[in-house]
Length: 215
Image 1 (cartoon, helix red, strand yellow):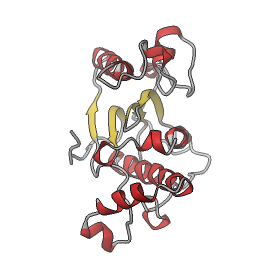
Image 2 (spheres, rainbow, N blue to C red):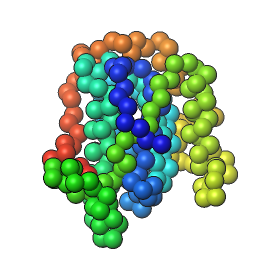
Image 3 (tube, one colour):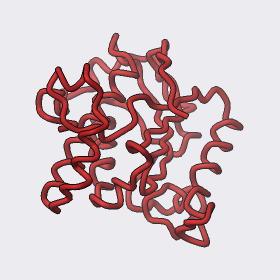
Image 4 (cartoon, rainbow, N blue to C red):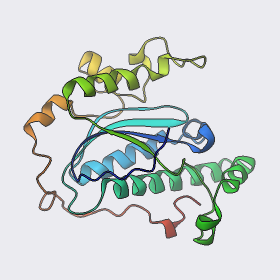
């Protein structure tokens, strides 16, 4: 269940869930998995760490180690990521002539956002998060996300390591999968409270709302 809660800390490891609007299979329909990986790349370029993930057809789970964000809230960072991924998904849907689906996403935009120029609601407005304060909790969340593709009536694979859009293979075998992640145990030697100032070469801008990120 998505919640409207602010993350008050500026660093730490967080379990994040982002859900497609109305649980539509937008990642699958738009083949938008690469948009998630590009967002992960952006986070890495800012000094943050991708610890684990799974991209399901209609939602995303990720464990992210946020290095001190210099006053920019983690909520804002995730909101930027949602806009970036929305922009890519809408662009892909237009290329595929998914007119009915685009209209459905348009109908979910609330009046306030519509007045600001937003045309499509790609993700649920809020996201779910939990702070990871122990290795035991991280292990629990990794097990939960990695077994996602193996559960439910729409089971995607029999063995979690067979699902490509996931870090399950790495944690099971030590071999990186489609996207490289950092083992959370390595973060024990990283001071996440240290500012990213000096780490950054150049802050790459992700699309703003005015760039039609969710249009």
